[in-house]
Amino acid sequence: LNLPRRVPVPGGGVEAWVRAAFRCWCALVNSAARRVRSTWARQATRAPPTMKFGKTMVKAMHQSDPEWAPFFMNYKFLKKKIKEIKVLRGESVDAEAAAIQRPQGQKSANDIAAGAGEKMFFRALHAELRKTTDFYASLEQEMKMRYARVQEGVRQLREMLTVTEETFDQMLMAACLKLYKDLLMLENYAIMNFCGFSKILKKHDKNTGFKTRDRFMVNIVSQQPFTRYQLVQELIQQSEHLFTEVSQLGRSAQPTKLSLQTEERLFIEAILDMRSQGVTIRTEEEKPSIDAAAAGSDSPRRGTPGQREAEAEYAGAAGGRGG
Image: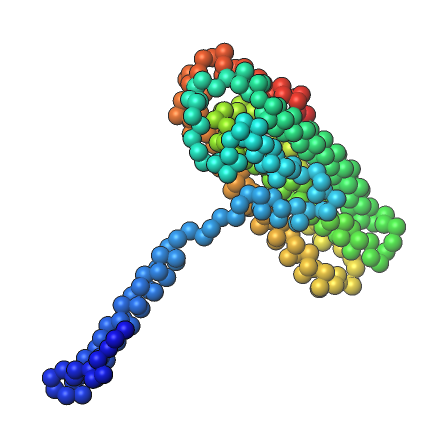
């Protein structure tokens, strides 16, 4: 900038000029402070950002037994299958939020069956459902046998028929604790996989314009044992009672190591925190979609009845029935 060599001084001399400059500087500082306070206030009232479901699923895997990881539903893989549908259609992969040009009421099961991408997606979906269902059923039976073994140990402790007199109660408490942790992890496994299937079907419907999620969840996914897990909940309660009884019957004077107790307690708290998150997500996922809720279960939806029934039937039959 071409500034004059001598800056004009306001009336009153240099002192008045300094006061004016100081007042100007204070006004700028106060204005900046108000903007900062306003930004902080908005951030304080803003809801914290929610973690994407895919990351929540990975977190649940890390908190579970490492052997279970391959048997969680592969959410990331199914997302790729949805993108492949758009690629095979010749659409842009990144245009997920773009409106589907063809009205949803005109989309029928014939449109699904005619699409190679749709066939691949539903085959993969059913394969993931069978994998999850079979693994959960095997773990459920394993937990029943483990509970029976711990129950037998408690009976021996109650009747003083233990094989060792010194540390049997400690060994039994450790067995109760391990069973309790695994049952909590199995409950989380059931909750997170249910949410995973609901989430991926929502994403499918959003990207394709079909309406398959509500009927697929009700007619197929909700019929699988891992969606109810009533037996697991009962075993959790019974394990808590066994642990309390062992604590009362314990005769060992040697306490369990404090570090082990602290580690186990923190791990259980982390599992329970994940369970709370999962239950919150499941509560949202169990709500019907907006279109279904607006139409009502007995009200006709857009499209002919034959189209709607065929669409739901293909969603259930593609790749074979789950479970």
